[in-house]
Amino acid sequence: MSHHHHHIDPGAGDRRVAFAVAVNVLLTVVQIAGGILSGSVALLADAAHNLSDALSLAIAFIARRIARRPSDGAMTFGYGRAEVVAALVNYSTLIVIGLYLAFEAAWRLADPPGVDGWMVVVVAGGALVVDVATALLTLRLSRESMNIRAAFVHNLADALGSLGVIVAGGLILLYDWRLADPLATLGIAGYILWTALREIGPVIRILMLGSPPGLEAQEVLTEMERVAGVESVHHLHLWQLDEHRVSLEAHVVVDALDLATGREIGVRLRARLREAFGIRHVTLDVESRQTACVRPHRIGGGPG
Image (cartoon, rainbow, N blue to C red):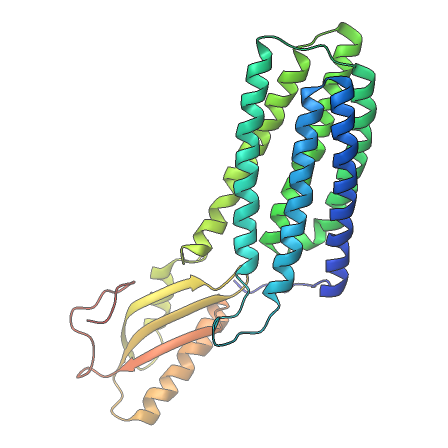
């Protein structure tokens, strides 16, 4: 469970995200103008998605800054989950945008409007270049943070959307096939919805205090009970503070008769959890047979 990361300097990362925001705002203005002049709903759809890219990057930027604040009396666990909340907002926005685009495309399938194919291709081509450049700016950061990954997915989806718009514009130029524009929009919407629904699950899991993916609570409990001096473990809680920090708390029944031995067993348990699972934030309530909870839950639950 333990991984080594080569982190980007926070200041440099912030500058990348800020630059990406500025570029996407400029691109959105150009796409809206091109969409209105050409009559392309696919281009306007791409512009709307690009505006959401700019907003998602702005949210990601603010969340990065908040997440670095130290813990205090109001937020004793720190502000790291600001990035998780930002990811939830961005994926939720993507879902709304995807549904809206699908509705607009379906409406225009019945009566496809006339579209200026050349303008669509030129503007969408420029958008594709900017989208790819923005995605590259955030690619490395996206590997370290689900917050930035949500913004990256926005940009990646938009790059594919721009590609779809270019294809639609080409088909209109070559064959005057007006259905290509709303059909391209439907394709963009489908991809956005599929990606957002897939990525939002891990975000919700963290906010719901779920155990980390790939880490079974029963396996952790069994490993703890193998430590010398441990009779049993109950009320095991396993959750993620944020994307990179896993926490554990549990009641541990030991066969020790004195406090010093009980503390020594606690030290061994923490070492085992760190080595086997990479869990470093551990809270243990050490109990004797006489003080142990009555009919406790093995996993989860409260004091017996």
